[in-house]
Image (cartoon, rainbow, N blue to C red; front, side, top):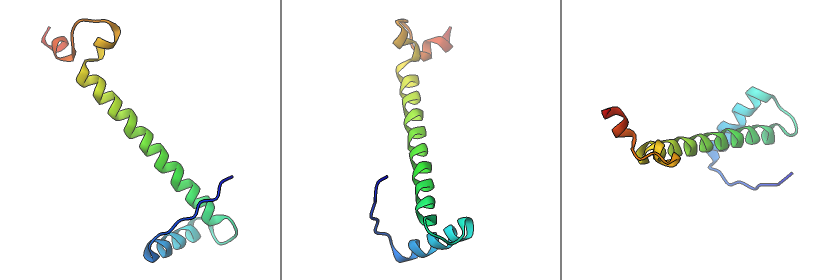
Length: 79
């Protein structure tokens, strides 16, 4: 397990702590649990963006060019 030190604005800190308390209640480890959940969500979103960008790049390049075909996406629709 790692230790991370964060500096955030007071307003964000107060709002986050209120939300953590309303969702998880009070107690030891609740804040860490909420931050871990937030980090997991952020990681998932970043991976989804990366996959989306890779897919768009393949479409722009022509998907079939990766498999040895000699035409691109636009040519497929013209046929």
